[in-house]
Image (cartoon, rainbow, N blue to C red; front, side, top):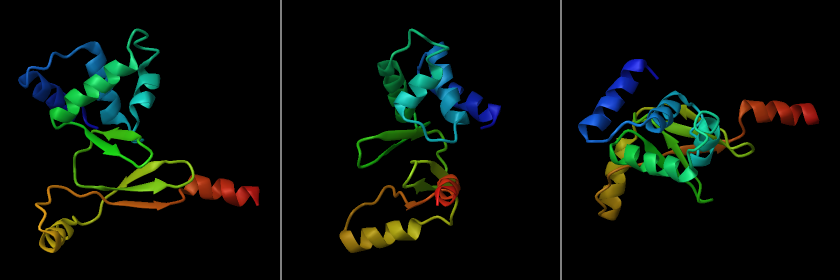
Length: 147
C-alpha cells in the first residue's frame, strides 16, 4: 500500500483524537502492507520481535480502534476466527480449502444483489461479502507431486 495511504490513515486517526503509539504505527503498517489477511495472533507473532512487551490484547484493542475509524475491516468465519484487512475497496476473496490462503480479486460490484436481497426480504441491506472456495495453486502443486 502506498506511503500516502498510510499517511492519510494516520492523519484520520489523529483527527479522531487517537494518539499514535509505536505499536499502533506498527500494527497499521503491517495491515496496510500485508496481503495475507492476518489474524490478530499472526499480527502479534509478526510484530513480537519488534515489541516484546506488546500483548495480544494490545493488538485486539488497536484493531478495534482501526475498525471504529473505518480503516480496517474484520472478516469473521464459522470457525470463530477473524481476519483483518486494511483494503476497504469493494473486492472479493478466494479462499483455499487446504491451507486457508485468502486472495483478493476484483469483480464488477454486486450491488444488484443487495437490491434483490432487499426487495425479496424487506431488509435494509448495508453490506455484502462474497467468497469463493477451492484449492490454491500451491496446494494443487503439492497434491500433484504427492501422487
